[in-house]
Length: 163
Image (cartoon, rainbow, N blue to C red):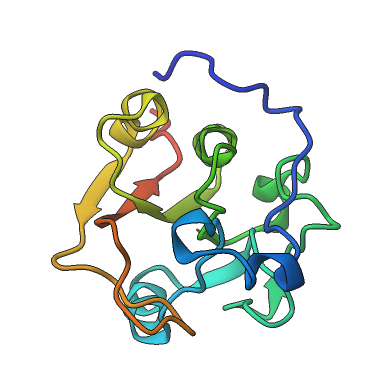
């Protein structure tokens, strides 16, 4: 079981303002839109019902949580079905991973696309508590000229098996 990290009650936004983000160098970005082919493969397996960290433009599901709705404070397990999460990759990623793990303990299946930062505290506390699928090669995110400058992984948090 993970130990406590960031408070699940912290508020945060799913993504930084798009206008500001596109004027930043790629290395400072925190939002990366999921490649459709990757999402389709995972959706065929998990049948996602909600994108918990999206905007109208980037959502991968008909139902999605926007920065204004604040996915860190919304109870995902009450929304039903499998959750897709491609969180902002900045300092707040630990809070998102804590939320994903916490929601799985309440009954949600949460599938996360995250940078494979195996040296990070959030990785050891939360990602390693889930099923990890490393992605071979570097992802080319939507709207980017080049592949990501970091490796990625899919982390799956499933509800506990009740005896």
